[in-house]
Image (cartoon, rainbow, N blue to C red; front, top):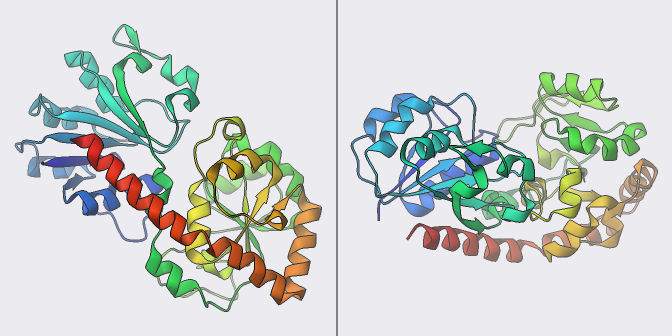
Length: 338
């Protein structure tokens, strides 16, 4: 079976430290499926004349050269076509929109969210005289977030000694701000790019803003908040979108990243439903209601190494569960392509 993955990031080269999770997932699937992967319009000539049994369109970047990619689908009218999406809040893939308009064909979805948990207003969008939901045939709900978990990284970071401070990291999500406001007095590090810093600040978030985390082997700068890695922090705060409080979509990527880098995760209590449904082992002391409780926990962990090790041991007990689930996800995706 011959498969093509079309990643919409429009990057000529995908480096090992590329931070976008949907790009990482595309690379992982390429290796597992032993298939072709393109991520820039310049790659199109290398695959446009190939015959494919399945074509997976990843994410939905607005910067993609959709019209140029459409020729690949034109040349593969019998291929099974998929949209792979790891976020409930992203509008439709324009390449697939153009394909449905041109040929009136449905495609299948591979997604973290069940159909019922995707943004309803997005699925109700009009496309070629129907709703987007009408154009999506089979919907495969799988935990794509497990794919990034790397056992080697887990083993390498397990005995890392330099761990201090509290961290939150990631792009600005407006639907997390209300929850984050309860932690404004914690003075935690918030890692993101400078454009996102401005968005956080405009929304009223108070934190020590630093550059994006480094995900490769680069050394950190101990005198400036640059080059810090996830494994350098004692705690990382877990917030989720308000939509996710009631619409389960597995644990977020940061759960698997913190597990992988042996940074202790602390959860805002409003994520309790997600925690319960995940089936993972979370110590009750890892769940806090506000910044006061977070600071209290942080102080205890700094003073009591045994408590820190106890909570870390509970967190690490999830490794085997995640590895098993990751393999199941890969197999489900492979079977869906058949």
